Length: 143
Image 1 (cartoon, helix red, strand yellow):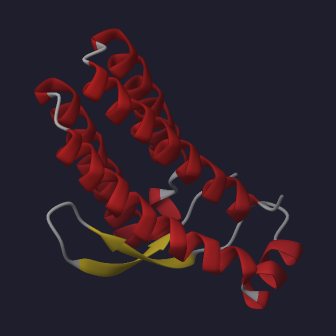
Image 2 (cartoon, helix red, strand yellow):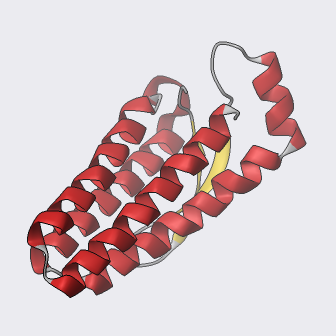
């Protein structure tokens, strides 16, 4: 896997854990809900920690804000035992995941990855904010 494909896999993991949390909400299994939400939050914190604010500037900040909004949605969804809030988080994550997936197959991105052994290139990702709206962001991160 290249570094961008690894990011896609992390997004897939968040979606999987959120669906498991929704199932736990429906079963009224608070412990399982908290465990699955905790896994999502761990992934978000990892992604957040890998952002390169010194390189990505406002684009990295946009992804940082996206991660923070998903973090808040997950906490609220868990606190309120709201499958709808968790589904909203899934929709947002899927939108950005698809952009990462496209980037992972982009020949220019693959060329930049091959040339840049010190870290992946900045990649334009449209970030959908919780509550709607999308704006392009450029992510600068290290794998």
